[in-house]
Image (cartoon, rainbow, N blue to C red):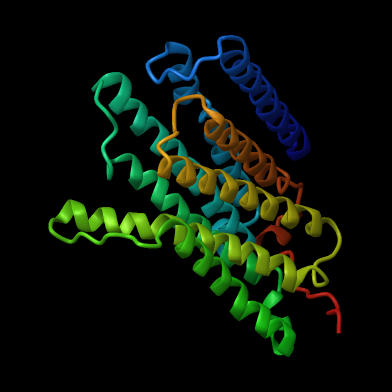
Length: 289
């Protein structure tokens, strides 16, 4: 099968999975009206919807190879977005192992946090590669864009700190307590970092991109925004102790995985062999000055 056929097949699989899980989620929440953490339906949904992330991650790895893998900026961005998706699925599987195999309450920190927190780091690195690939750095010579580049990340980081970490009680009494502090800070500040980079990519490169690349890059940036909403809503719900399997937050994560999977798959183009080894956005279009 050619690249277009493969891309269409993956798109269909991801969309069918999304609608199937959506129907299941609606059944649990509006027909069964179940918010019972021990419910088999709730637990099964929470344990399996990550298959969308798995499909998206595998498809993204293949797409990255088409773009030259680590040899190109776009290839590296796609590679680490894909690894980030797979890391999310690792975190979900680890959590399911605690709940359904060990039958214990999920500890924090736990093995699952290796996947969840590493996905934040992978998304940050991938976002930086995408920012470089768009040529946005060339527009930083303009004062107004320098101000945006400096103030936007600071505003997001300060907002995340104020919302989640204000009046935080530090505890460095043990290794576990220290790790908990690092994760408590790392999650919201790391998530604010990748969304700041995504917004910078859009604001600084919206007039640099052209042709087929513009919509694809915007699709990935939108996927990061949805992921940020999912992470933000989870942290907010966890803070209020309102997290349960197959709840609203799980559905937002399902949506985030679906959007990122489709975004990565949208790059699966049929490229000339040589073109795939170079950055498709190396040739920068005229700036908006």
